[in-house]
Amino acid sequence: MFMNFRRIRKCQCMQLLTTGLVLCIVMVCWEELDHHVVSHMRSYTYRYLVNRYDFLNSSFAITSNPHHKKDASNGADGGLRNYPYLINHPDKCGGEGKSRDDVLLLLFVKSSPENFERRQAIRDTWGNESFVWSELRANVRMVFALGVHPDVQKRSRVQSALLHEDKVYGDLIQKNFLDTFHNLTAKLILQFHWGHEYCPQAHFFMSADDDIFVHMPNLVKYLQQLLSKQSGAKDLWVGHVHRGAPPVRRKDSKYHVPYDLYPWPSYPDYTAGAGYVVSGDVAAKIYHATLMLNSSMYIDDVFMGICAKAMGVSPQEHVYFSGEGKAPYHPCIYYHMMTSHGHAMDVRLLWQAATDPSVYNNSRGFMGNLYCTAMRVMLLCLPFYQNTYSCMAAFA
Image (spheres, rainbow, N blue to C red):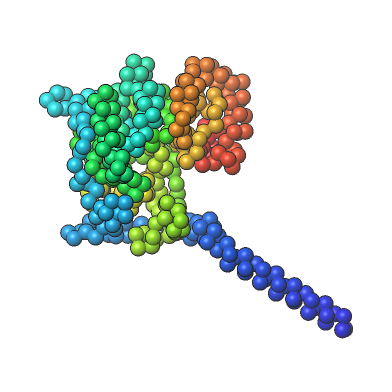
């Protein structure tokens, strides 16, 4: 009996020690657990069980005396729509006394003032308007959206270089706001307002980062197929969709969103800002939403989701629009690729490989399809590539 009592006491002590150790670990790692587990559980519960975003129209609506959160980067009071143009090309899509062109795609590339090499690589590859017209028989208009350099000491030199660059290429659209992460929403507003005013006839509108790769032949073919359908291309917003994403509350993250800016546990569904496409009617709806909604949400793709939700537009998943990562380099991927993210240095090499005619030969026939399906399963059904294409893309 004495021995049993000692064993019981020993077992209880071990339980207490184990419980204390677990509690200590939870306390030390609570911030990580809250960020990676708890916030996502809260967000998914809100998204899939409650799934109501009625607050958006009232909470983000602009009142007669709007109170916008100050932007620490430039002291802006949220009047992002009122910045003047420093560089503009109002006749890019026709107009100004001549008939407007029939534009399949208006392509806006978000770029930073000093990223000349990235812009040049895009001009030489997937953003080359002449190539798209001569090889694909599609009318695409591409411009770069920029603000001004945030460093006062460098601003004059960089601005002179931009004016020279635009004189040569004529494809920069710049407004007088600081080009910072916290002003990405200003770029989004710039894109949709410029498109509404100067290129409203475009059938499709695309927003992309300057470190993205766009497989233009595949994208043009996809958009032309949408237009050829009897119903036409309406209510389209397609890309890599984030569903039930929670706001980041960690103050050390650049994506940190405080409770006073967005107190709810889940964002509306939105597409990754690296690259997405909307139809012309949706672009018009987003334009009108930016006139009605408070633009203090500085994460541009989330603000896009808020605007779309307020206008009754939902995003559609396309398995070959990239998220935050690079696509694997393989011909069986190129055959279906739409976008791939994270290409600051290798755009020219990827363009040459992805548009090689032999890519299409490798995927033809029963054996070719079987081989490529097996290769895509091996490449995409791994955790490493989940932020690029989902495993479902292997069977597309």
